[in-house]
Image (tube, rainbow, N blue to C red; front, side, top):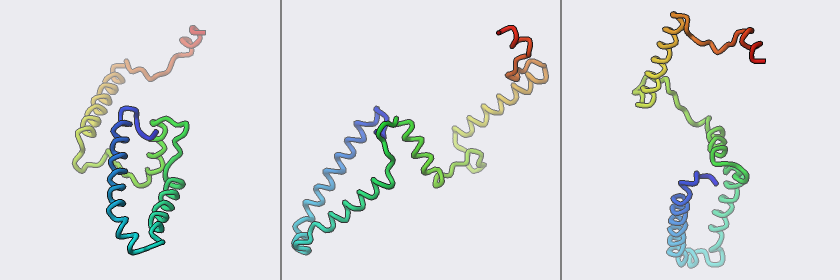
Length: 134
C-alpha cells in the first residue's frame, strides 16, 4: 500500500530478497549464538522484535484506507522538517529549476506586454457580464 501499483512487484521482490538474506544470516549465526547463550538464545530475537514492533507502531503511518498519493503526501508532511529544498538558491541550479525560471520569466514578459496593450485578462467579469449569465 505504500507504493504505486507499477512499483509493487519490484518492492515485493526486494523485500523477499532481504528476507531470505536475513534468514541466511540467522541460520549461519544460530549455532554460535546457541552455543554462547544457551537457553537465552532467543533474547536477541526478542529484542529485535520489540524494536520492530515499536517502530511500526510509532513511526510507520497507517496505510489502511489510504491511497498511495495520500500516503506520500502524509510522509512528506511528516518529514518536511528534515527536508530542505531551496529552488531559488543561486548555487548550481538544476536543469528543472533553470527551465522553470525561464518559463516564469517568459510568462511575466508576456503578461507585462498584454497589460501595456490593454489586453490582459485579470480574471474578473464585469457586473454587466455577470447579469447576462443569470
